[in-house]
Image 1 (cartoon, rainbow, N blue to C red):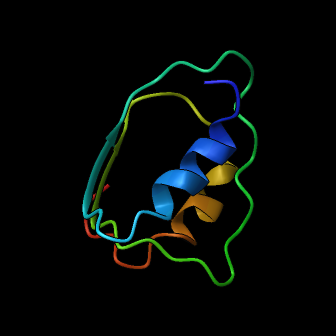
Image 2 (cartoon, rainbow, N blue to C red; image 1 turned 60 degrees about the vertical axis):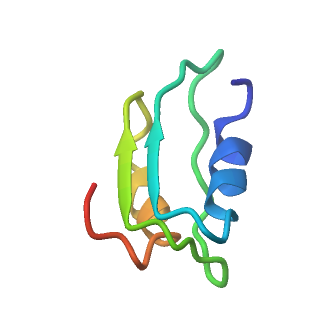
Length: 70
């Protein structure tokens, strides 16, 4: 995946997605995910199996108000 930020945003826009397991390799350093102010995902369970910047964690959570398992 060349742009992981775009990938995440596309995943988070899926309106019926409740469970998501993500595993991929990025060709470059994973970019910071922008903080969400008005876009929310229905994901309740999220598994991430790749590296990303710790600074992106709070921004990631800003999309996941329904999250119950990480």
